[in-house]
Length: 254
Ligand SMILES: O=C1C[C@@](O)(C(=O)O)C[C@@H](O)[C@@H]1O
Image (cartoon, rainbow, N blue to C red; front, side):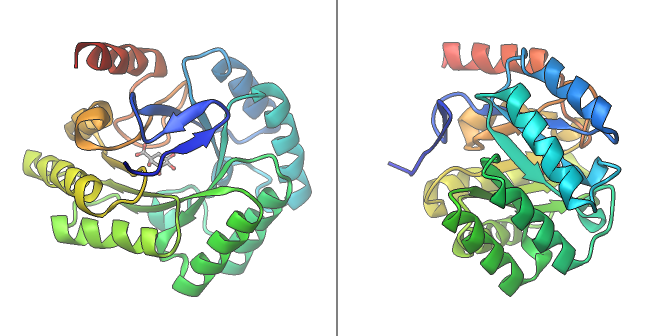
């Protein structure tokens, strides 16, 4: 039996893939509006994409938003993500600022997960992961390829590397250019799940070509799928209400 992750009444790594919805807004007002709308949707995790926030360099303003989000979302787990430009995010950030910002978020005790990009730098990623764990925060390690789909062996290598660094959930998002790229991602997912993973993993092929990968986690082994409430944070995300119906139907008929 693989390790599952239990967060605020959600079991990640078992049963229906959990739905994570990103908040992709620039202003405090819009972040609050978005969170208020999301809390009544069929959602399991809320990702705050801090790289979109206009004051993401101001640690006090970031903390202030986290307090508000935790008051609105109450029992919904929060994933704190600063997605760097090189991985498809909205802003660049110096590595030292990236570490500081994540540590500030962890120190609030209000977030359940942080996203740590695999290519942050090995020693920096290692110490941030350790820091998160010392403060009881789970780590989703991540890697994005917005142009192409690496080979199956490369996808497996990256996912295993994240796991070796101590991440609780390794995640990879790739861009398929042909249907065969989607097969590669799905094959890598099921091989990772069957042979290498010690716990939950997350994978997706982006864009419309990759849509099936966002729906088929229960077959191939991806435990969380990202869906949109308002704005998409990556191409190919479906609306929450639609994907939740599909995931339920698949589960019921399995
Ligand atoms: O890493 C991911 C996955 C994602 O890129 C997607 O393809 O759904 C969306 C991002 O917001 C999130 O941080």
